[in-house]
Image (cartoon, rainbow, N blue to C red; front, top):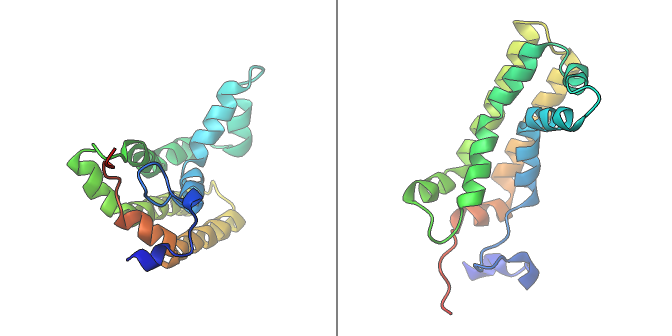
Length: 161
């Protein structure tokens, strides 16, 4: 398995000698959590806390659905924060299924947007097409990236002092 690490430099590894998490995973999480980013931007706007949300999500239900669909991304953030040598068994098992969790998060987010378009007529067709393209691109990335394969295959272990 060491030949998989041949193209990485020492800077690509963390304190536990694990390959640092792919930046693509962080980008994917940011995409799924976009409703939370809009919410944080609105909270920091001292003049009008609701204007930012209304500008990006004209229909309040779509904003709430976006927060709901970000649940999978929040779970992955939890896994990332708990990923250490003394982690619980459920964290280790969940980490092994990271790709499935991320795909489910993307699929659920897409379903929310599809429902917003067809059921409530809250989304534009262009955004729906862009969303489908983004989800397919992330799915292809998750299954083709060697770095993600390595990230999922290893888990931090205590290093000898």
